[in-house]
Image (cartoon, rainbow, N blue to C red; front, side, top):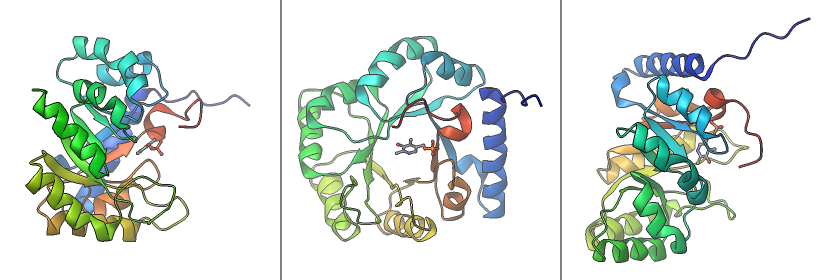
Length: 229
Ligand SMILES: *Cc1c(COP(=O)(O)O)cnc(C)c1O
């Protein structure tokens, strides 16, 4: 038996967009309110170029250093693209991240908030920021605990005047994601934050049902990752 040829990145993107549109419609939401962040971590510039050629302009990377090696040249060719940092950010990489990313989705602690303020004080234009919430209260996972989120949002947005626009979460892998999505959406609503980043390859349709404005999809577009990331 011969294996079916693998679908191209372009046709996978088309399929995911169709599923996003259907999920939005089922939730009585405008499809234009759901943005696909194509998670290209571990995949090379050629794969990113395929997605860019297919019209995709919004991408997510989880490591500053890897993104630095890939994206400046791609951005030169496609000035309109938008790059999101979706992985943990160490304070010693803040200047690099500020220079490279349009959105940092992983603001999760006061030290990082103050490092961003320090960049702004040096005259740097800050990326838009989402606060990562550890909805499952997992010890090893990044993100502010849900009960600490209101005070942290107030600190970042009101006291430090950081450009906080949304919330992001990664539910525990072994749990139903729905309650986590519901919690994140509720927090965002309570605090008037318009962007809600949640849902990955396996659960983005559920996330859309609960109000996701940004779904972060990697494997379903680019295929399995060559190494764990
Ligand atoms: C890798 C990653 C994704 C994409 O995961 P897939 O299951 O490959 O779609 C989404 N969000 C974050 C934070 C990630 O690190």
